Length: 207
Image 1 (cartoon, rainbow, N blue to C red):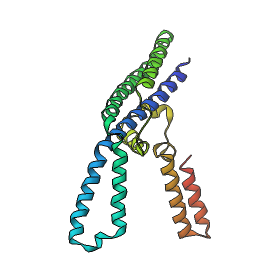
Image 2 (cartoon, one colour):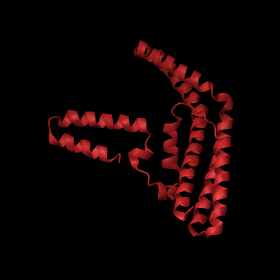
Image 3 (cartoon, rainbow, N blue to C red):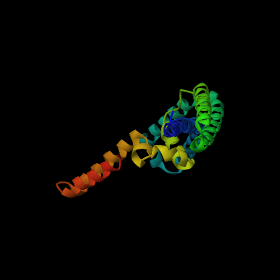
């Protein structure tokens, strides 16, 4: 394997492991924190509904039921939340190990490259054995934020060249944002060449 190919392979694995670590932490955070937020808002709503009759509407009551269902869904993960946190810590350690391999690979000779390849394979095998396949709903969205905006990933970006909408924002969120922006542009500039120009700009951001 050539040095450039090895650097790309390490960065690709680093992305998978780093994002996987943040996804485990996202599940851990959602399971740990969201039920508390739901209880807080439910209690607050109950208190204010005693003072304001308008708060007792069917819509708001139905919203509280939905929040209760969400809390019930999250509770299914509660018994294993510590496992998600522990797995995330292990994956972060593997990510940091890969960063060191990446820096070594930049100046490694042929013999050391072979050693780095073996270490890379060992890290990948440990990643497959430690990661948990089932994650909570919306953990992917939260993981994008935690990985791209809270994490030091310069060495991965050096090889991956992440784009804003294509990589740093979840695909479903990107589609939703673009759809809304195009719709508002159409409302403001319909039957105008400005609308087509704005659409071209928005689509170019996805490239």
